Image 1 (cartoon, rainbow, N blue to C red):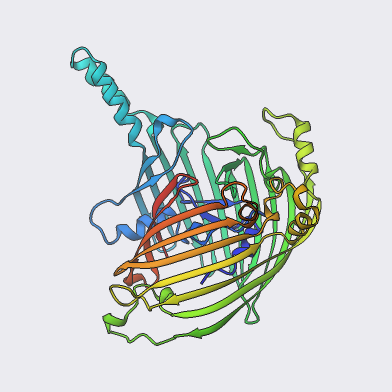
Image 2: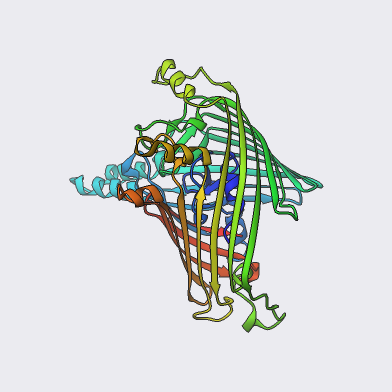
Length: 458
């Protein structure tokens, strides 16, 4: 079933989307943007943890490929990542991950050899220099400490050879009765907007208190967030940053109510010990037909609208940008959808077909203004003004292998026949792991972002 908490998470700074740009395997979605497609939601395991899990069952090092464009085009998109070091005890662990981009190395070595008049010792030395080119490599260190009974602290730092600055991150998790408390700080923090563009916010600090889903279908978030510095676009120089990423201090609250109604549902119990009827993935073991809906409201107050930053842009430009951001804002969001599944995902062939469709409105006020203003409304200034239709299709290929396609369609572009209505599309192949009950190895690709990666999802 679609993650019904996507709507309320998307309004905050705690919504993670899968990305090969960082060693931990995720970036933040931009608050207030249209809801992301379900396939883009990041794994609950950090990238180093994924390697650690998989490494336990394999005698040889695991090397995971990914596609990730970089600003130096000669580096290429292909990257190979592996676990270099793992230390752990009952209360802490530390990992080091390494990444290597082979394209530039192969091209430079080929050019060096082809341009050499004689293949002598000097040529060998020149070739060897390319193997230690720092732009080919990146390293990441991640460590987590557990403080029983319900607190953990995570530290992360990574450096990329082609970039001067390091990425640093600190996260604190604390579990309360029926609540989760998260404190997070990053220098810089990486965000991904709905157009597939990345933004680096030099300083990002947040505190978020989120409730678990109550028996009445209610959940809420309360949080404080601070942005510092001028957002910079990654691997590009054009475009204006989203308003929610500009400097400032924001207090935000959101509450939502969700409901699901089944037309029919097969909840047949799994026979223990009978491998023929044990599902490849327990989360895909219920044939059903159902409708679901979420409605919620948000309130945001920018206590401080940042005015100082250092970049090539002028202070006047920033003041104009932040002036477009409302100091106080209240809004509604909602989603309604339908889900159908055939099969229990226990047989080797033809035992899983799943279709989901949900209509999302991330800002009711922006949508109302667009209707009132008609064609005069500039949706480009406020992307949340247009409803989106998110579609998901899953089909068993053979045994534990499943094909999946997720897309997000802008209804305004579709109705006006202006531009390409499909804003985002992600296709993937997954291999379910019975031993993890609901774990799988997923290889996904996003044509819009020209990105893809292989990861473990739990």
